[in-house]
Length: 293
Ligand SMILES: [Zn+2]
Image 1: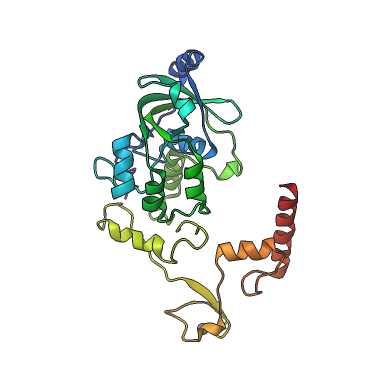
Image 2: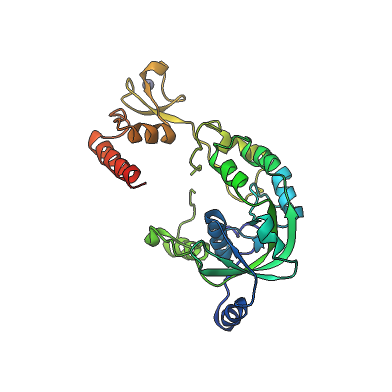
C-alpha cells in the first residue's frame, strides 16, 4: 500500500535553487521590498516545502473569498483558513501589479520573491466571523488579523532562504522528508491529533464536527473521533463517559488552557493530572519566563 497523495494531488516545491536562485538574488537588489510578520514568515516556509500544497503562494481575492465563505479552493478542494500576505496603505502605495517584490524577515534577511498578481482590500471583521467564528479581539487569530495591514497581496512565491528560527530542529521534517521516513519505516497508518484549543472559543468536539461540512472521503484521511477523557477517582484511572458510570463529582478534568493558568499562578494541578515534582519544574520554568518578559 502506498501513501495517500498530497492534498490536491501534487506536492508543491517553491524553493529556488542553483542558477535560478542566484539570478533571483541578483535581481532582488533592485526590487521593491516588503517585511513579513511572524505568521506570514511561517506560512512562507510551509508554502516552500509543500506543507500547504496545492498553494504556490499567497491567495488572490477570488480564492480568498471562496475559502472564507465556503471552505473551498477554486477547484473545490477543501481549505478552511485563508493564507494571506498583508500590506499597509503605505507599503501598498510602493507596489504595483506585475512587480517582483523582495520579501524580508523582521530582521532584514531576504526570504523570498513574490510575483505580485493582485492587490485587494478585504473585510477583517467578516473574515474573523467566518473563519474564527468570533470577532473578539482577545482571540489570538482575530487580534493578529485586526493588527495587520488593510490590503492583501496575492501571487506565487519563489523562496530563496528558509526561516532560521529552528527550535527543536531534530523534530522538524518537511512533507517530503516525512514521506520518505514513513516509507522507510513501512508505516501504513499515521495518526496527526486535534489541534490545541484557543481559550473557550470552541466546543470540545468542534474539531470533530467540522468534518460534517465535507463529504466522506473528500480529505482522503479517515477521521478518528474519540470521546473527551478524564481521570475518575472511583475508576482509579483514565475514563470517558462511555466507560465510566460514576458521578461527575468523582471526575478530574482540566483543559490545557486551565493547566497553564494554574501553573502560571504557581498552583499545583491535582495529583491525578500531573506529578507534583513535574508541576514544580514547570512552575519554576514559567516564572523564569515571565521574569524575563
Ligand atoms: Zn468512574
